[in-house]
Image (cartoon, rainbow, N blue to C red):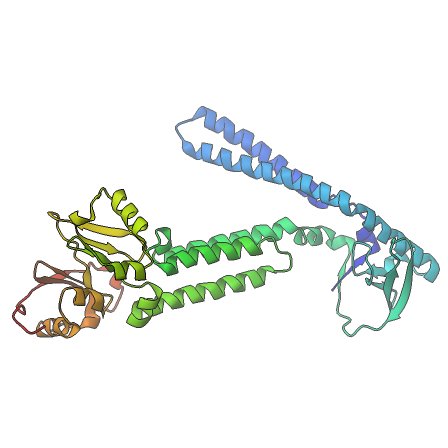
Length: 391
């Protein structure tokens, strides 16, 4: 708990304003210098960018000065009342004002006052124009004494915009790290995890930065918890077919050879009006012209019309078999595993496998133990000699 001295309370509250004005003045001089440099060399956009940035910072500093002044006007009356109360206590208790400390800068009911070595609780009437002191005994006597010598640092550290700025900076850094570490998937969301990552992270940052009850450390811990949840779900999504089906689902064929699979469409939440709208946006007016229409995990519709080349979906991704795709081909996972086994390959070694024109094209993970990201992934074409085998 902080205990504020009489000197601190009685001192001018313009420290932060003066610092911000000095900061704005320095920025103004820098802006003028940068503007002159830009006028002399307009081909160099560096000076223009600096000019815009410094101008915005200067406007921010001036706005914060006015905000600080308005806040001080709103609280100055109660602050002055606290000073008057200390003076009255000093007179009645015959104690120097320099030996009196209060737990609040504003006059409030229940505040603690330290008079020399004795502690009192202040009881105020409804109009805040009279008080009584009740002696109390404190459990914890460890206090942070705020004096005039530490006033500048204390006022700046308690300044609300500083806390908001630090929270914004932390939120910005965590957001950038999540985007980069997650493979930039949430820049163009392709599944529910990417969408939730954006929504929830934005809600956390937007909802907590203005709350004075949430400290910077608590804000950072909440961001870390959400990051762990996001990356944990991505790990489960990549490593487990069960969780992949729950988190991201699988492509659903809603039209096959001009026939709409109504059960699949309704199960996917795709109404007739939504389906026709998605067809029209891709230039298809008659569903009878559609050879295949697949509803992707991100809600987009991939359409193949008669006369165009079919879309080939991967049968293996990240070392796992896409059973839905294999079944759609009329094959079985065992058939695919046998094909790879005959070539001396294992499913876990395959980064990507795609079945194109009766050929299985596979891209293996790098076998290098060090810095695998430095090497190009090479693909291998396995011809299908299993057409006559039992499916």
